Image (cartoon, rainbow, N blue to C red; front, side, top):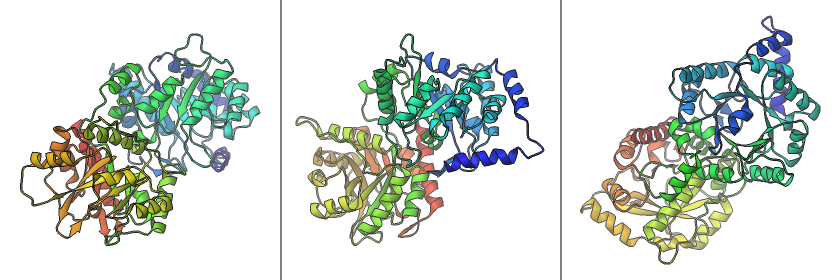
Length: 556
């Protein structure tokens, strides 16, 4: 409501400017360019059975802060289009989202030019995403070249929504009408909306619930409204907004009849947006092939920043794209935290990830006859999916009792734990949450890498969720700042198919080498990004995460 009120004030102030264009002139300009406008309903429906994709460009958000201030909207969104985006959503609100109509115009020009060059499919539809509460903004959007725009039921009284939908259609725009609560769906339908966007994010609490779209789809079905993507005679389309992170999320909504998904934050943080979109498997055939062949393939998926002691450092790591935030409970560690300190970190990470409870990593039990490597690889994929969009907090323990671990898990609200001592593989089963198991590799030990890798495989059980390799130095476990023979990690992944997180001695100036040589499933850093043992350096954290992601993209 505050953002909406501010936008109203913004336009009132603009109306007093000498450069102000009156509403009738804007409407004439909007009508003049309506012939080339793309109809959103048609864009969505003609993609069936392929899921229509809306890719979003936004420089910042109220809940996540800056995320793409350095990115060029033209280049970024052309990469979206090359990946398969049918719609480009552009945030144009200035104060909180740092956007503007100039971004929309740049996107329209660049994607139109790329399509005209025969460099791919026809141009994508361009969606203006803002807090639109007046006919003036509708005509302004159309005059700037927008094909469609967002109308939010939560901030638009019913009579005004009815007028705005009418104004849109008078200039050739079929709007995307956003709802969240069930009663908002009623209002949207009563006002004649045909393309309904379901925001999985509660705009008041910023919490995410992917089930919101499922419930809206069920409601439409129960009312006999035809909306199913690809259904003959469909009169409506449903679009899922917010929270999708992988092909499994897309497939979930495909099965619910959803016609379009909108993805923004993960693309703004992706090292290669084109590749990120392709991995969503918009075509159901591609998804079936992916599931049929789903096995471990080396390549960076997770970045962990460990030794976090302060909420502000946790947020720095989250904002640059870290997936796992480590808090250390080992009493002898320089970076040890209390339950109270860990709780503060958990609160910050949950707020960033727009959730109130511990994450559900959904690790299923191994079958009695299942190979331990296959079981751990399967559990690792579950962790990867859970941590892809919403970062998780890992509690690191060293030779603590299961009672101590469970008390810390419950007290701080940890998402998972990491066993860093001599507990053994089986101890991972009794922690109350999924557990990473650290395998210590002596930096100067003899023996070839493959032999050492084989010993690890022989000791493996199905109990850990994932394996982390760290350097062992006599008298010190963890935070050594020393690397081990990365050939061990390569052998585990390439020969045995076991995903591993590589730790030990990593820092911004060698992480690219590690990712390039090993192609690890994950990387972990602590002392390599610090100004002191309990304080992270924001620039080093950013350089580490971006360096790791960039190196991974170069290997694809």
